[in-house]
Structure formats: structure tokens, C-alpha cells
Length: 254
Ligand code: G
Ligand code: G
Ligand code: MN
Ligand code: NA
Image (cartoon, helix red, strand yellow):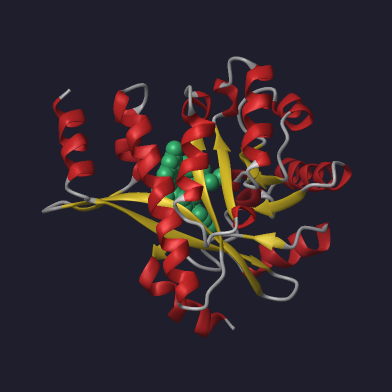
């Protein structure tokens, strides 16, 4: 209760910030885009991670308010980068609850209209917690209508949770993100390797893009390339960073 009030103040006082983690094509090193990840810059406490405060937001009125702020801020930042000559695909995380809120499509359409320079094709929503989708037909409709605005969708943390294969078959998404737990384990664990290999093949079979998360070492990157996955994200490439740090990172990366 009190903590929730503190979070409400934090939103009003603009204490939330977005960090951005690059996604690259490791076959040619190209920067493909960035994923926005929320942090709370709490005065006197330093940077608070979303794992700590997001659970408190869940099923409160603030969940949607903060989710809306994330999308607005990411679109603003994309615009700032574009003015600096950096045309980037920006991804944000959306919970199933956020996606299923009445009026999400109309709200998103207006947010995109406020950012006319940002091609909607360069804006992606990573859908989290698909297990919380209650009405599959309704979810398909929402994704399809948002897709008509031009935005793209990814299934985040793919392989965790339940009924992933049903979601994969039914939801109109362009990209799968292989959960980092499997990627991290794959070099030492044949089951994890099998899952990573299987998800990559499935993505190819469905003509979807596939991104491996949690790529921490060059060895992981090499094996993923052999398995047919080129798109990667992880500490071995770059940690999430403030927007201002991206240009410098890009210079050392290239
Ligand atoms: O950045 P970090 O690894 O600490 O993120 C932890 C979790 O918080 C991840 O599962 C990530 O998907 C989630 N997360 C980060 N930013 C956002 C956000 O803006 N909205 C939602 N719903 N989840 C987020
Ligand atoms: O659930 P989601 O995939 O959105 O979570 C992303 C989270 O994973 C972010 O909080 C980010 O900080 C974290 N992350 C990204 N890359 C790596 C990695 O290579 N190793 C570890 N341990 N965490 C990572
Ligand atoms: Mn994500
Ligand atoms: Na993920």
C-alpha cells in the first residue's frame, strides 16, 4: 500500500528511467535494435531493478500507467536517436494484462501518431507472461489490430510458462525470443541445448525471426550461429545502458 503510493510519486516525479540493451546480428555484427528495460532511479537508494518493484505494480491501476509511460518514453527516445542519425528498432516489454486492457489499441494508435517520425515497423512489443492470456481469440484480435498499425510483436521468454506451442501457432507474432535460462545452460546441459536447437528450428519452420537472449560468452554466440540463430542479445554483447551511452558503445562495437 505504502510502497504503491511511493511508486505513484515516483511516476509523477519522473524517477523511472529506461535502459537499453542492444540486439545484434552476430553473423555480420550489425546493430538490429534495442530493448527498453525499466529501472527506478530512487533518490538515496540508487538504481532499483524491475524485479523488485514491478511485482508491486501488478493488478494495480499503476501497472497500466507505468506501462504507458514506458511506451511513450521509448518512442520519445527513438525520435531523439533518429535526430542524431540513428534509426533504431526499439522494443518494449508489455505484460499480457497491459495488452488486454480495454482501449490498448486506440491508445497505442494515438501514441504512434504523436511520434510521426518513428516508422511503426521500427517499434516492437515483447509480450510477457503469455500464460496469463485468458481469452486467446481476444488476444489474437488485439495483436492483429495493433499489427495493422505496423508495429511488430515478439514472444518473450519463449520456452518458459505453459502452452507455449499453442501461443506460437495462434498469435500473429514475427519473432521468438529464446529464454536466457536455456541459452545460458546450453553449453553444459544437453537438454537446454536440445531446447535451444528445437526453438530455432521451430522459428524457421514458422518463418519467424528468432533472437537468443542471455548470450554471455563468445562460445555461446558461436554455437548459436552454427544452429542457425544470428540474432543475439546478452551481457557478452552489451549490458543494458542509459540512452546516452549507446552511441559510444556502438563506436567500440563496430
Ligand atoms: O532489466 P532486468 O533484467 O532486471 O528485468 C527484469 C524483468 O523485468 C525482465 O523479465 C523484464 O522483461 C522485465 N521488464 C523490464 N522492463 C519492463 C517494462 O518496461 N515492462 C514490463 N512489463 N516488464 C519489464
Ligand atoms: O524477461 P526479459 O527477457 O525482458 O528480461 C531481460 C532481463 O535479462 C533484463 O533485466 C536484462 O538485464 C537481463 N539480461 C540480459 N542479458 C543478460 C545476460 O546475458 N545474462 C543475464 N544473467 N541477464 C541478462
Ligand atoms: Mn524482454
Ligand atoms: Na526475455
